[in-house]
Image (cartoon, rainbow, N blue to C red; front, side, top):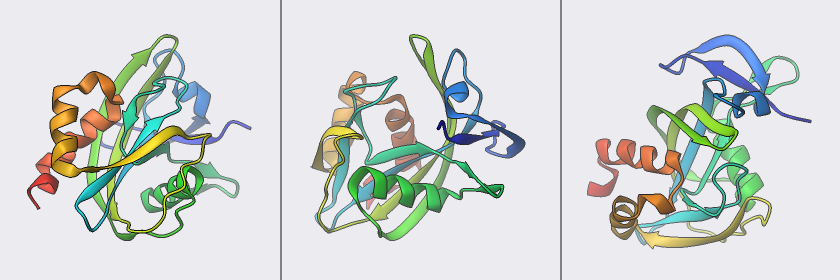
Length: 179
């Protein structure tokens, strides 16, 4: 069954409309809530994923990404809940330390008949345990020094998902690469 996602305005405010995920990603889509998450370890490395994706396949991404869902019983998922659902589904990770919402950004990216049309919140957390990437989510993963990652995404943006590129702008604005 296609998950139900949460429609929003350009400020990330819910409009009260809910749509099947496929509707939000077909044609011009419909602006909806999403998250992207980046995990960092104690070696100052970030976890990146070579993503399996209907629209942006085989591109490097941040650690994970997903839409926010509306569940049965009319419960809207929070950014934190979506982040933990994403990490559990994609890596089997159930807990991260110091999970932080750095703020959101709007973006639109077209790929054939599909698109991404999202207000995406940049979530960052710390993680130092085992990683088990689900083969349904991605092809591979790697831990990369965060300065090397910043240099590569600026030099080779064509190798990254559109939301990773936009997420880096938030990370830079919040001083993530200065720490």
